[in-house]
Amino acid sequence: MSALTLELGGEIFAIEASRVREVLDCVTVTEVPNAPPFVGGLLNVRGRVVPLADLRVKFAMKQTPPDENTRIVVLEIDLDGAPMIVGVVADRVHKVADIDLSDMEEAPRVGMRWRPEFLRGVARHEGQFIIVPDLERIVSETPSQDAAQALKQLV
Image 1: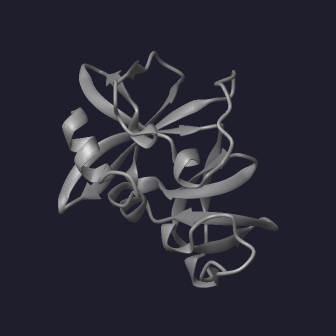
Image 2: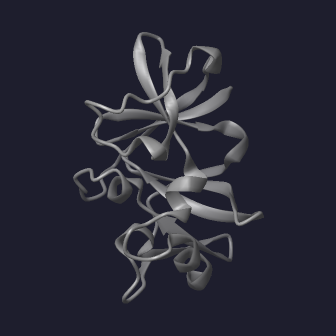
């Protein structure tokens, strides 16, 4: 799989390159009152309103203020059978890499700080563990509010 590798909270994640529309420097985010923290803002991407999701919220990671390395990865995901454009905050974007999914293993149930159902698996690349998230499941499931509905309401 060709994947964009990015960093969140010191961990390396891989997102299928075919889903990536573009990578942006930090831009102005319009906060939405009463929106869930996971999808609390909107972006203007070339005249289009795009919800901004923060995977760090879903993975219970420490949220840090943006710095010169922070990027927004604009992705297309499948939400309830329809394509949707969403921005995702990344602490740093690394590169596009070929990751051999045949070596991907199921996420361990013990010793992981993330909910295993949010992960497609863990792969190895250049001696590092790479986390492959299940973006559709992450976006469609939240304990406090249906994130899919929140995303749809924001756009």
